[in-house]
Length: 346
Image (tube, rainbow, N blue to C red):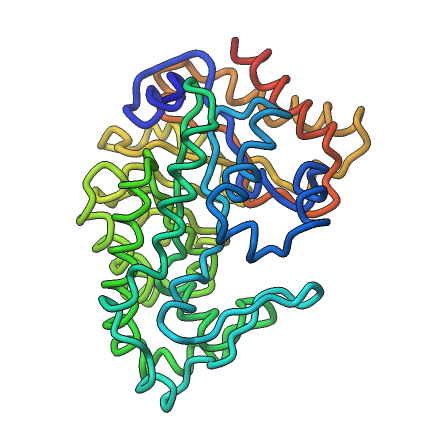
């Protein structure tokens, strides 16, 4: 396990934060591109050895402190019988999207758990090849985010279909999904994941009350089943939704996007209670496209307010991006990010 990550999740003050980026094994990276020349995305995910090789690449190239399971959030939908496939240009698709009618055709969740066992095996293989001083984490999709993908394919371009169907069939769908996600987490922890992140990227589209009932409470119920092992990430949260997350007690950690001031989250003098979570984030991933000199200047402007905090005030910080690394991101800027953070917080 990585010492800096261990300190972060246990809220032990330290000078240098661990560095990890969402989608650090992805399309921007030459290592991933080379693997994709010979293998489909599904092959990289479903073959434990290939998944391990994919996850290891950015560790070797950029020296991140953490590796993450190489996989996709949508495999539980495939296990439920929705027929996941990937188009090179169009991304993930479902042969049987969720409707009032298809809800009745979903598989019994507890009979299809073994269909997710490849993720456990991928984590085992990743741990074998990962240096001992690096940490390993897993992830699943947030329940509401998976509902969104199940009903309308993504959360781009509005949420009309998902929100309409949520009023009709969300509880019934969760009866299928939640037991499977619980077993999915269990498999990943058995495979060696030190923490499993719930990535709930569609939840920020919800009004505060519905964020609470449709997104946060289901995610918390999963976290309560695995005390101290679950982190939660969402983006585009309102201030009230952010506050709800910070008040939770079930999650070990929380991740936020670049729309929130990280220094205020790490150190809020007005709060009556000490922060109980590690905090992941939250540099704007689009700034990584700047020319090197401009990027370095922007990075400095981001880290300096954080540098002014004491290690006690920064405790629990896992340094990274507000969302995933985007395709075509210059590798050199990723390398500069890791180097500069370690220089500033040495």
